[in-house]
Length: 296
Image (cartoon, rainbow, N blue to C red; front, side, top):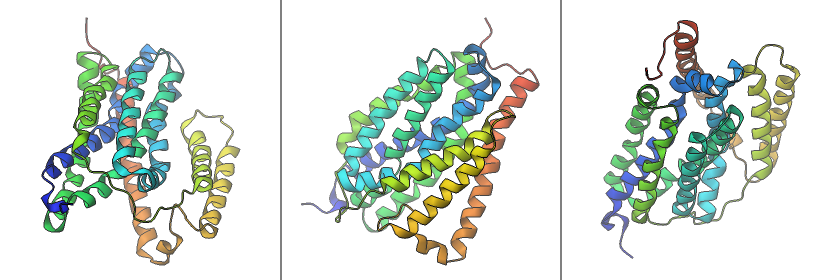
């Protein structure tokens, strides 16, 4: 078998992985500008607008580690292609959604599919490259992520203004199909030792996070006891991670004081950034009357 440095399609494979990364991260922000327009065309309470984004990011975040484990078990290229396929189908469902409830449900499926795609990137890059080339390939991920996050709101506004908010989801279809067609350049790779899946831990973190986030996004008057219930479930998740032999989060990481500090800093940064990217478009469109819809 040829060494990874001699695999002639490795740079084409990297382009496939980065395109999928861009497509998934783009979709995390592309709806934030289009949200008020979607709300205007799919009537319902204004409190549904944040869920157009949150329904995507929550499953994406809580299923990332499990998605990575699935790649270790079943093969990273295989799980990658399954995730892209699910993402394309969910994008079509979003574009065709007749009401806000179905759109939010399709967004959740999109987020879960993205959680299958993104964790495979680093593992596949490690399998495709060695030495200095590996460092260069890994170094391309950061710029792609940053550019995708910045481009999302701009592209969302442009497509919504020029065509329709549905186009913000349909843009994923040609990108996803191109990724699937070019996925033949990927080499299959899986963990040398089959890891265990922490299904109980995954279920606890999904339920706990959902209970915590729901009253924060939902309108005033929501049963705030859900927040306390979520904290209890997340506490049970933390206890479970200490007992299980295959934890989602390695408890020993918290022995280093720098790790919790880094987590707290990242939480603060992304909370502020994501919050502003959600609130500013809503204020401009709903509060100030700015209109991104095409004028006819």
